Image (cartoon, rainbow, N blue to C red; front, side, top):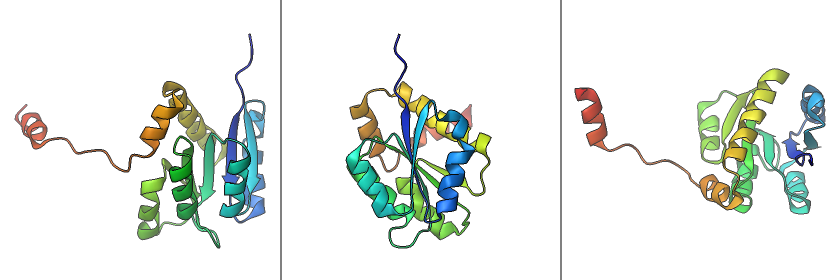
Length: 158
């Protein structure tokens, strides 16, 4: 029996101490996850050009290419890659700008078990959606349609 290939995670933050800290938080998972860290959006794109990545975890605010711009490119070029945003900024306008390109938003600071659970949920969902083409189509969806008014009327009546 062969072992499943390790998942490849890409951490992006303009603070190298944060990148190192994320790897340290998850170091017990290094047998399952290959963790790559970079300090800019441009470096992240270069890493992704060289080898496939299963998950990108980026900071929201960075100089040059911010997290929203980075995940916009990732969504367009690699729609099957999971996109997570990690940030300590609570500005509603800034956070709402990330919603169309982010699968999950995680508040900073984030402890190791919380981050690990979030990543494991993403990978469990990827296993359910094992077909990369299907994940690519789903990854391009910006919003789901709302339920018809007849559903709400029936629900209220019940």
